Length: 327
Image (cartoon, rainbow, N blue to C red; front, side, top):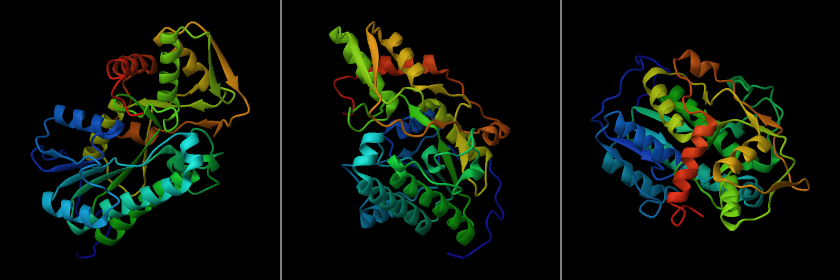
């Protein structure tokens, strides 16, 4: 492939609805939302493979699949993800698996000259004590949160991979960094889930059992921003059609709540009437993580799903699929 200057000759615009569009991780929380949103927008050739059908950690298989489908567009939403417990217990897995997934998919995309790629990362890439709200230029300016630093380093490597491809090959690839996501097809495992789906499962089970109390980790004081996966999918389509640049773009709501507040909201949504207790011997993680989303807002996009409405929809989905959700 010929080496060209970053960004030469490309202007973002409406994507070809009939082109082959590969969504890596199409069954997950974000990937499934992207498939729903893009199908609703008229895309007719969205493709993907489950992890059982294609192990993205297997380089030869990834290259063979990409050569077979020859996508014009690609969203890399596949990743090994988890909450504080999983990240702190299995840092090698989170680092190694995600580095391999990213390098395999992105290298194969280069080899097949995929025109437009959106790499999806995580807000945990930013320093633990970054100034709030966190701007994109806070990247690599301080120490990471130690409970998920391995995962964060992998995602930072993905951002740099995209930037390197832009510099070396001139392909108009972009990166988007979502805040804490939730919605249908999330992981509700007590051991492997993020805070919000873990709380939904815990409070729903307590409500069904008529339990008198629920115990949550930490103090409940850390502040977190939550974005529904359907909003995230809408933002990804917006960015692919309206943004081009080497810097990652924050995707969030621009507002946050305490863990205690979101726990109380979930308790109300599921109908739990008992007491909430807090195990302060367990870690809180980063004290606050609120993204500065002004860059995204300036491009013309803002979130649309309020937190309580999103929680009601997610709880309804969870209850409908409780026997089949990822645990």
